[in-house]
Structure formats: C-alpha cells, structure tokens
Image 1 (cartoon, rainbow, N blue to C red):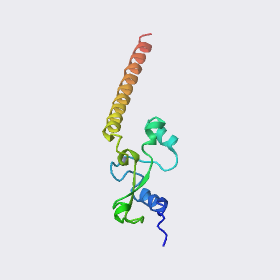
Image 2 (image 1 turned 180 degrees about the vertical axis):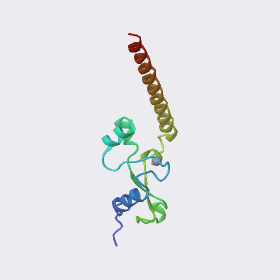
Image 3 (image 1 turned 90 degrees about the horizontal axis):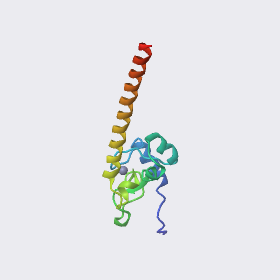
Image 4 (image 1 turned 30 degrees about the vertical axis):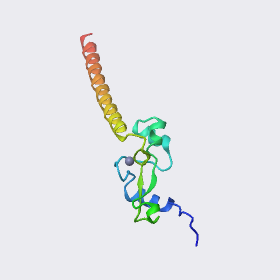
Amino acid sequence: MSQKRKSLKNPRNLAFLRQNGRCYYCHQPIWQQNPEQYAQQHGLSLQQAQRMQCTGEHLKAHKDGGPANTENIVAACLCVTSKDIDLSIYLRYRSIVSDLLLLDWICMMLIGEAMIRSVGAL
Ligand SMILES: [Zn+2]
C-alpha cells in the first residue's frame, strides 16, 4: 500500500467554502488564488496579504493518523499556522488603519464645511 500523503486540495477547498472564506482559527477572511485582489480589498500590502493565504490544516495531526478528508481538514491562514508570526500585530494594525480612515473622513467633512462657508461669504 502506498504511504503517499493525500493532497489536501479538495478537502481544503470544501473547508474554505464551508467557512465562508474565513480562517478556522482567527475568523479573518483568507484567500485562495488572488493575493493582489485580497490586498486591495483589505487595504494591506502584498506581503501582509501573503500571510492570509488559505492552507489546509489537519484538526487531528497527520502523524497521529488524522485523515485528509473533509471532516478532519479545515481552512486556516498562515498567520495562525506559522508560529513565528504574532497574530495580535495584524489585528492591532487593522484597528490603527480603521482609526486613520475615520480621521480622514472627519478631515474631509471639516474641509468641506469650511469651503461651503467661504463660498457663502463671497
Ligand atoms: Zn487565521
């Protein structure tokens, strides 16, 4: 009998769909094919987007006899599965970005109001 490790592609694709394109562990959106589009959608650099690539993860480890089937494979991002990247850094980054966007929006509103006022004064 062959000991060749079964491809995770099919169970991973199914897990990706089952989880609505989100990581099993951190619930962040993940991508399967297009990091450029993902980076654009989420306001990230390409390097940051690389960490959110969908990977197939065994719930029960392969070495412990966990099968490569849909029951045992979940879709997860790299930031959870690679141990040298701290997920909290990403989450902190996301909260800073949304704060900056809010500030931008407030600035636009103030500038807009000032312009209306100066036009009205003419
Ligand atoms: Zn994750």
